[in-house]
Image 1: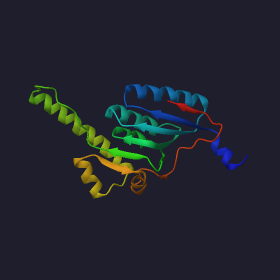
Image 2: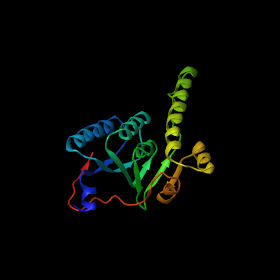
Image 3: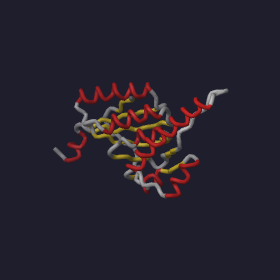
Image 4: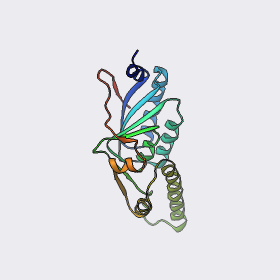
Length: 186
C-alpha cells in the first residue's frame, strides 16, 4: 500500500458552518459520535463562521482539542470572533488564499435602565470571557505588540498570509478533499 493511500485511510472530510451556539455544539457532538463509530483517525474540517457565544466556542475548543481524533481545520472564507478559538482546536490549521480571520474583545449590550449591580455583573462576565479567550490565543498564536494593541481597542483582522506569519495557520492551503471521498456537512 502506498504512503499516500495509508494517509487517506482513517481520514474523513467535513464542513461546519454557521453561528457558534448550542445548536453547533450539538451538531459537533453528534458528528464526533459518528466519527468514533466509523473509526475516523483524522477529521479535516472546513470551518465558516462569523462567531457566536463564547461559552459554546470554548466548549467546542476544549472538546475537539482533547479527542483521540486528529483535527485538521481549514478556513475557506471567514473565521471570526469566537470561531477563531474553535479554529485553534485543530492540531493542523490552514487557510485559503482568500481566507480572513477577525478577533476582538467580548461585547454585550446593557439592558435599558440597568442598575449598577447588573452592569457590574455584565462587565465581570465580559472580562472573564476575554481572559479565557486571550489565554487560548496566547497559547497558539504569536501576535506582535502592535496586534495586541489593536486587539485591545478594535477588531483585529488577519489575512491568510498574516495568519501564517503569527502561527494561526501552518500555511496557506485550500481545503481539497480527494476525489471520490465523501464530504459530510456537520
